[in-house]
Structures are given as structure tokens and as C-alpha cells.
Image (tube, rainbow, N blue to C red; front, top):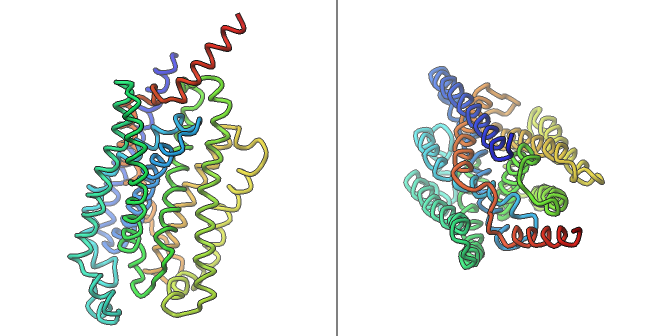
Length: 395
């Protein structure tokens, strides 16, 4: 089968499977909402935060690829672009959370709100929470559209000025993205423990999302790799570099996690330690230790192993492991707020899968509507020229 036809068929299979998962998940989610509305919204929040993280991670990494313009970047660039454009889907999926704020966030309780410092009490109101959430999407949706549109338009026109504009927008867009993620992390995640504060949490949250975006893109790339129409020279060099991106984001995330813990542990002030106290009671230390071993320890050792990053099959497995463990890491971030003991509901699994099914189906739809590789990318043209030169020399 021709390469393009095989890739199209593979994407169709992935999309169909995602839609089936989404449909089953939605039905089970409705049943779950009837049985236990609190567990429903808890599972829904976990799913939303997980896939929102993948989306924003893809957006950030797409802009990074525009700026560094590495030889490997065009092999993975369109996966980041498609992931970034799912932000519109995430806006729609945010709406159900509006109806569960009172069950999710302690600061919606007047008694809890009155116990907070005046600055926090004035910040955490439902009206301002919703206004800020709307502003985040007002920033992210146009940013994701325009920064990717320059690349898509370049496929049709070949106008290199479009790539220059994408680079210029990415430079300012990255700053805007990190600032907006910082506030979104404070609203959507940090405020689950409203008395807590961490000055590093926004950057840590951005690092988590970069890791999620990188792992998702590597996983999809691995599924399509053998049939991507890449020049041989690029294929030989790119895989190891893409694996290095995954390793770099993994190390950045762990670095941020460790230093947040170290700084808070050394400070030993109730305002800062409350987050860890809440999440290290009961059997949670055992849970998070196991997750940390498989989320960081195993992938880190594997990605450092000589030759590992040159194998697409092994790299794909490492990315899949990271994505699965990211979900369990998110459980540890969210669930202890609602349960001092390790307590995972089936809805904590079903609802992230349902949202994920919708996300993946949308992601594949965007991929299929555009070129899978940026055909007018400078690195592509250099590779073609190199290939023709080698062919001429051989003749």
C-alpha cells in the first residue's frame, strides 16, 4: 500500500477507535453522574486538566520548534500544530466544569473563603474565576490558530515570509503562554488547596504540560514513523533528536518538581507545606513513590541508554509509559483533596478516557485536513537538495 494511503487508513482507525472510547465513556459518565455527582466532577476535572495540559504543551512546543528551527523539527511540527488547535475543543469541554465548581473548589464555600487572607478572598470568587478562565481561552485560541496558520499557508504558497512571521509571533507568544498558564494553574489546580501558595507552581505546571505534549507527539509519530515520507538523511538524524526533546522535557519537569519540594521543605511554613501534608497522608506516599518510579525513574534510565532513542519502537513505548503515568501523577495532585486515603473511583478513569477520545478524534481530524509534513520547510528543501547532490555524485 502506498505510504500516504497507509497513513490515511491508520489515522482513520485511530479516529474511529477514539470515537468509540468517547461514546462509551460519555454513556458511563452519565450513569456515574446519576450515581455520585461528586465523583463525576472529580473525574471530569482530572480528565480536563490532563488533556488541557497536552493541548497547551503542544502549543508551547510548536512555538519552540519555530524558534529553534532544528533539522528534526519538521518531522514532528505538525503533530504539535494539530494538538495546539484542539484548544477550541477544550473550551467546549470546560463548560461542564462550571456546574461543578461548588463541589470541586473549597473557596466556593463562604466559611472557607472567610478564613483566607483578604487578597486571596478577593481573588477567588466564582465571577472572577469564570472571567479569568474566559480570558485564558481568548488568549490561547487566537494564538494557536494564527501561529499554526502561517505554517499551513506556507504549504500552499511557499512564501518564506510566513515562516518569519510565525517565528516572530512565537517569540512573544511563548511569554504570553507561560504567563497565562501560570494564572490558569493557580485557578484550576492550585486553588484546590486555597490556603497554599507556591511562586514556582506556574512554571512547574508549564513544564508538566510540555512533557505531556512531547510524549503525545512522540507516541503518534512512532505509530506513523515507518511510513512517513522522510528523506533518508533526515530519518537517520531526527529520531534521536526527537527522543532528546522527550528526555529534556522529562528532566525539566522533574527538576521543577524537586526544587519546589526542596524549597518548601526547607522553608517549613504552614502556608507552603499544607499542599504536601494533604498529599502525603495515609497510603499516598506509597502511591506517589510507585508512580514516580515509573513516571520518571524508568523513562529517564531508558532514554539515557545508548541506542534507545534510535529505536522508534522503544521510544514509542517510553512515550506511552510517560502518558499513562502522567494521569496517575494527576490523580495524586487532585484526589487527596477529596480523600485522605488512596481512593480511586472508576469515574477517575472513565471520564479522562471519554475526554481523551474526543480530544484524539479532533486531533486526527485536524491532522487529516492538512499536510502531515511542512513541505516547504527550509530543512526539507535542504534535505532534498542534499539527496539530489548525493544521487548525482553516485551517478
